[in-house]
Image (cartoon, rainbow, N blue to C red; front, side):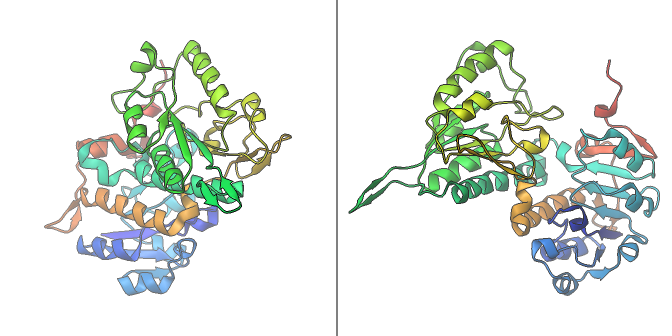
Length: 378
């Protein structure tokens, strides 16, 4: 069983799909691991560290030769996949909801492709949940970035020269990223408020010492799917919530937006008028900017300074801004999933395509896209 890992930094992705720690665990499953030269450079892992852990390091062509499994962070190119044998496995964050034609090109190479973003949120799969592991870091980094750009102190300080007031931070969306943002802002000493359309979020926000802000009507009480995701809200509810948020946001120094709905563009939460109501020097960090953005005026990969002096931060790939830590967590997620695909006694691949984890994540097999998200719309 041969596992290949390519250098993702060519596409501007600093994370890597294995670490020296997980190489040892993969070898325990009977695997040999081949890694493209420089694959760990963006995550501060030198080739020598991979070699010391027991992997071989070489060119991309040598890495892919004879590989049974390709582990990746982002979706690999169809050209890279074409160098794999038919029936090989491709496992990574394959961005299943975008670029269906690109995914079709990968599928046509005959590989079995598994998208880690589709891992079901069940107890058995918690250790494989890449969305949570990466969003957790994104929420943390969003606050660190905001504090650096804000340029003022976060905690209240009592000094001989007078009192420095605490910064006011508002977190929009209390999923994994939002909750970590709340916790981080609180640790830095900010006065934190948060909002979410899911009723369960209210108690979670309060448990972290923040105040919950939302229109709590009957629609709000039914605004969560069985899987724990937010449902799209009615125009009427959005209008009421927007009015409440508009009043609240004008008083904030820091705003972190984290709202995403799987398979849909990011919902617009902060209008240009709301941005214009904020004080000069305020900072908004939009963690959904790569999916269209929660904030009007946010631009992917840029910090936009508005006419009234508000900075809208639209960094791409925020988990990648903590590449060493993000890679360590992601590699463990991959190992936990791969472990379920291997016969530990025979030390060989034994994929059970009826397993609930496999069925939930398998996008393609035998040259065709087969996941329900690619089914023709009625």
